[in-house]
Image 1 (cartoon, rainbow, N blue to C red):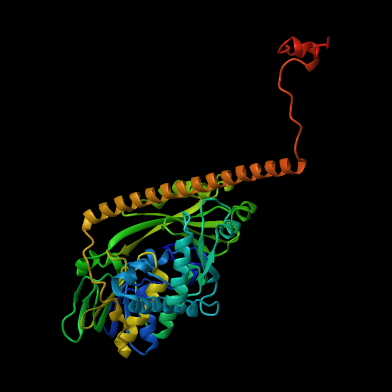
Image 2 (spheres, helix red, strand yellow):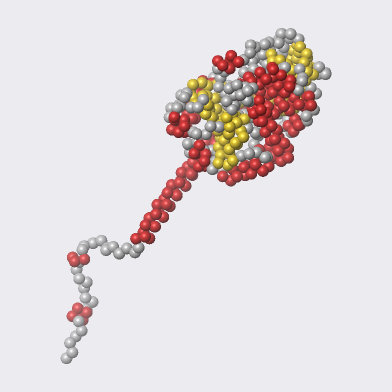
Amino acid sequence: MDGTFTSATNGADAAETPARSRLSFDLDVDICVVGAGLAGLTVALEAARLGASVAVLEGRHVGWNASGHQLGTVMPGYGLALGELIARIGLEDARELWSLSKEGAEYVRANATEAQMPGIALSEGALEVSNVEAGDALISRLQMLGEDFDTEVEGWQVDRVRAELNTNHYFHGVYYPKAFQVDGRKYLHGLAALARRAGARIFEDTPVVSIDPSGIRKRIVTPSARLRASHIVLAGNVHLGAPLRRLSETLLPVWRYAAVTEPLGERLAEAMTFQGSVSDSDGIDHFRIVEGDRLMWASPETTWSARPERFAPVIARRIRTIFPQLGKVGISETWGGVVGETVHGMPQIGQLRKGLWVTSGFGRHGLNTTAMAGMLIARSILWGDERWRLFSPFELVWAGGTTGRVAGHVIGLWGRGSSAAAGALARYRQKARVQERIREARLAEANRQAGTRGPQPRRPQPGRPRSERPAAPAANAADAEGPPSQP
């Protein structure tokens, strides 16, 4: 899972970002993309590469929200657990969808090269760890991923996990050697640069006021210009706003906040040697080493917005909980972003009506799934690729509005509490087993030593020394004096 964060824009990033261009004149194009996040930019890049004229309309600036704030992990999968996906649509279709998610990850890898995106800082490997002992579940998951879904994975036993992560908080792990990490913000702006070079036109500070999707040529109105297109792709996630508020309301807005620590020096190497990203099976923690001796760490989710600075002490405490040997950890910066999560946990990809497309609801698996969705929609429009229909079972479902957000918040609290309790119980049981094995080993050693010494003489009963003890009384005179003399 990729999380939703990367470091905030630094001076180098700002220098590489071209001046914003606002749409101030009427324009006709083949495809209009609403939203300049990961999904929208991928649609624009692929469509432009295939020869279409493309305009991207962004109400603020490229990657201003979740797409510009990622942890940068790229791996196959969706927000919906694999077992639930199979139960929902069957094994064969689940295989097809999983294969598409792998294509999305490889699409990111193909673009995220130093030649195309200098400073992308690609690193290999991702580890999903369990908060509880899950040996049987681990074996089952490995078999399913390896045999049924053709995914390269390794199962790590507890000792291997704790050799890489010096904490007793985690147990078994699933290692994905072909997963990787990138600097998420550089990837986003690199994607925009590739789209521009391919011929796509990106207009920032250009919100969409209204959309008329009827007819062959659809009409889009902005504050300062009008645009016509044969196809409109809605990639604005929870921020589509007034033009298509009903679509936005199918998504539950979920905020996650992240932080980067101050340099930790040699302390970090003592706590963690794994250089890839780490996420737990309950979706609570997601972290990795950046810049050699810092930790980038994402916090639990919330359905309410807040100032990112409020989460600095929360994340610092969470780091100390997992790695107490780090001691007090300073936070150098915090930031946050909101993603749209669907009720069913799968992204919304497809055609709402002829020429009107949607790509949204990626949750925390944005890097691979946005790439996959962008490819699917561009190729469907221009090549007639119909694989987007695999997402048809995951229809648009109202997320419940404010009530849904309250329910999501409560469920999140309950889930984190249950996870913490289960993890504490698992660690208690493990400690008890270790203590029992120590007692058994001591007892076995004592028995072994007793056996090598051989039989020991009986120890005298406590009391006075034998010389001081009174003689035993005779039973009778004959016993005392011996046999009687003969007459």
